[in-house]
Length: 270
Image (cartoon, rainbow, N blue to C red; front, side, top):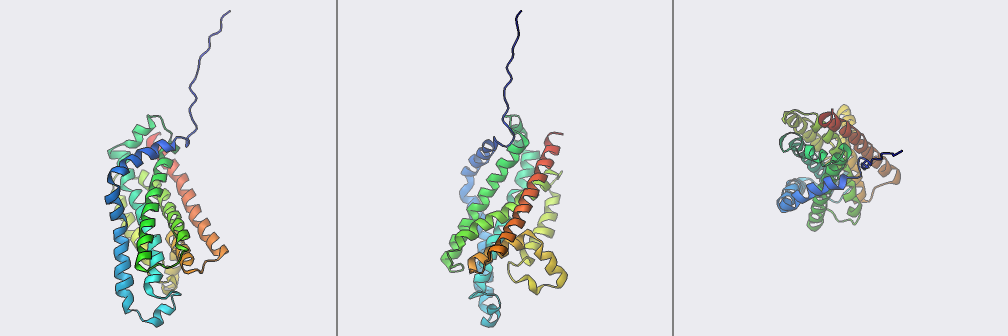
């Protein structure tokens, strides 16, 4: 009696091939990294110079004394560090994601490679996180050169900014995967990103806001990122406070990743 035997290819678990998706985005980035790097931190740099060295010179010493920093520019610099991480993360998680889903359809090609949904999402999220890290380092270096940041604790503030960016990357990935066109991005930028940029503690303490708006500001991921970066740079960080900010930002990143997996699976598989 003969027995027929067959072999079945063993498929790697989802998520273990994410490096291939990351390699694709990295290869594309190598062609445009100079222009991308410059455009990524010029905007925040202009805000730093205009608001810190321009408007900041008009703020008297009595006003800055209540900020807990030597000058206004030292107050806003760590805030802008966190805010630029948010802006970079959102920018890299909207139109590029829609393009890969609908226009250039890179995600479809990756799934045929074959990669799994987790590989596709994780690979791209890691790439966006790398982009946030690069722009954060670039901004921090310039801020140090200009004297806006003078503490060596900036070495910890940069990872804090990257975590802030990650807290926006994954939820926006989930949001982008559910959009049929780019009109939803206009709403996102105008009514969520811009208000957070202005009112989450980047340019002034949220205690200056009316009670309800202050409460809203304190639950935004950006406020936690700004407070974490600022407390590290100014040397006012406490273990409990920093842990709370890190936990909050991590929860946003983890929850967003779960939603991104679900959104991508619904869009690309079902």
